[in-house]
Image (cartoon, rainbow, N blue to C red; front, side):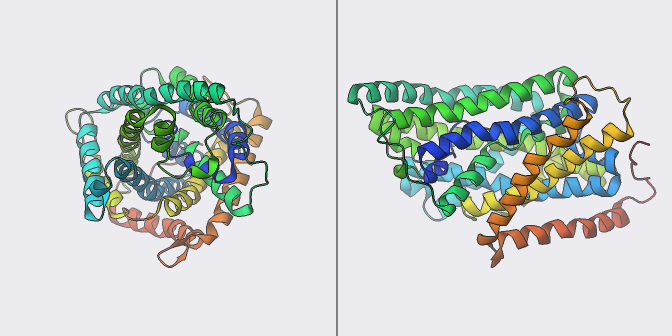
Length: 426
């Protein structure tokens, strides 16, 4: 749900190898690790279906819980459009005609349909499939790294010629940071399926903290190998790993990388479908969305929510990769800030809550969200230059977020009926 391997990190090199590698090593410390600590504590203390929505609702009340769900669901519309876009980009590297014009949209819609069917089989099917897809999509990179190591040693190029020593421009640095942030976000998504996870109090913190390191390695090692092999950073754009593989080992590895890129898009979309579709289900169970969205099939899957989300995600297809990332960061970032607030408020309001894992003492809990919040504010400011529907992405995101209170009132009016809204713990 966070990473599908090095696919999608190519645009980080717009600022050069040195800057890109520094970002990939530094951001886990100030972005991923604090987030992992927060999620580890809240997921282990409150392993409920709906995850971060439940945390914020319990800490701050129904209104802010709804805003958390609203921001996450609206962010998902743009986040989930990224993976079919990547799928078409990598497919176009293999056979340009396959992704040209309406063919690209057709493949993207087919990806959404396949993942919906897969999710209807249940969480174990998605989890087992994710393990298999991860092994398949990373295996070409193991060969690429080995080829790059041999190539660099043979040509004696080392990292020097490939690394840009000139300072990155403000524009290229902004692009690199935004892409790096996007590639390191999404740690909270696994929390929405807590009831479908064995021993969540133990497994959530362990999995998140371990994966923070694993994800960093899968990003840094291939880029470092490309630098060692003397591949110019300027050659990297979205989907360029196939070209790099062709140079280092031959066309066959390029084809394998392209196949892995399509698997990444499939695997990320499939896993995130599992996460996002539990949000409308949880809202429906709380009387804030139509009750039919909570209907489950025999495998416990909210099948109506899966289909409804798939339609919404399909409508967002067609935006550029950069625009989708900018808007996704704005909306996701706002929801993440609410989660950090919930961490602190629950420490104050429920000091005796059983916390199998703790993100340090109270001071640590308060400080954990500072660096991620600063990065979110900066990313939102940078996004003002991107255009969505004729206006800046920052303004577009603000309009979407501001609609949350209106939809809360509509939801409570239309669907709560006589069912009392859940309240925060006193």
